[in-house]
Image (cartoon, rainbow, N blue to C red; front, side, top):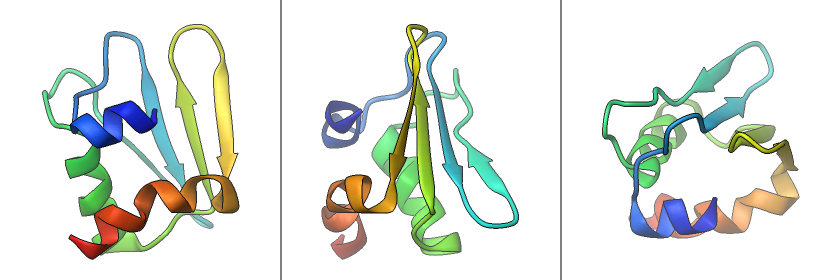
Length: 79
């Protein structure tokens, strides 16, 4: 996941990225060609830091707590 952010690469095939906020969740659309970093910047500016991040790349879902993923977003929030 970190390499997708660093490269601002789009999600591949059957991957899924979901930001979980208290009352709602935001899911990155696949196939649109938008880079992960670009989409994350947009969500962070509109909704702030989420509570959980879920990333699924066909093999298994990975759920990250805020203390696990917040360092990934530090550069995005400064830009």
